[in-house]
Length: 371
Image 1 (cartoon, helix red, strand yellow):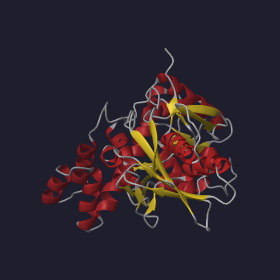
Image 2 (spheres, one colour):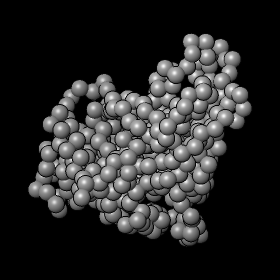
Image 3 (cartoon, one colour):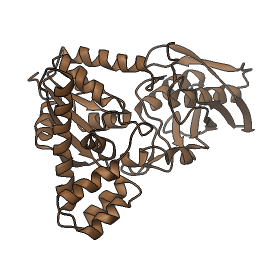
Image 4 (tube, helix red, strand yellow):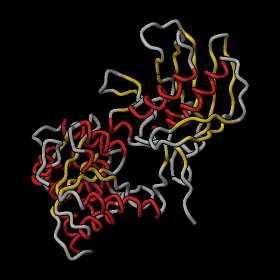
């Protein structure tokens, strides 16, 4: 049975905003609105759950997230759009993040409404506005703050809620075998063009990689299927792989866990504690690391302990990740692939790079044309 695709959060935010604008203009709406996803260029019909005027110049519309057959924590969560007609002269459309929309702590506290979501809203709302009309659109996720506690958003500098993140409107069912096939096909296509590729687990990592100057054409999204993707890369002729990811995710590879979804396996703190012990961390600090609620808290403890403990521990972890990945490939494919790793922290700063990771990072910048 083929997995059913759905849509990403920006799509439902856009649908709510369109419904609110049209309701303010006195249009009689049905139960859905039509608009262009842009990425991909496709007209979709999104159900509207409720819409009502708050005042003569304000309207609120509500949709409900449907990511399809993806194991997505936002499934069925409500997405509100509060639209207000204003007399703003600076911009025809102003976007704001309301309750449940995350705040980017490393970007002057701006709402976590990223480029695709902005473009989707701007381009689909403008045709409904009069020439001299301006609006302020506030996106609200009533359940966003609670849901964010079950994500790694804080690791990417987003707090207090969820992000309107993504590069396209279709929600990919990452849990389905068919999606692994799609990722492997993309990998094979890129392997025919480049000998060095960058593996990113999710959209947050891919977004950060591009902002750091990594050539998007060399980036491959793996989701949690890092093991199968490593083997596919080897069979496709890739010579070098840069693993670029959040330390709290990639640390699992140092423990030999190659499917990184938390429903299947964890052990991050155990792996971290083992490496701490191996480099000689004093027992009192070692115990605190083991008892930490998250790897981020443990990292803070290591940094506060001084003596370059964080660098020593994570240097050992990065080297172990490289070796474990290379061994995994050799075990499952008759090829040798060099693997390097770059791990970043919640402040979106590089925490550590293995020796090979530094070399490969220089190879995947847009200025590099060696492969």
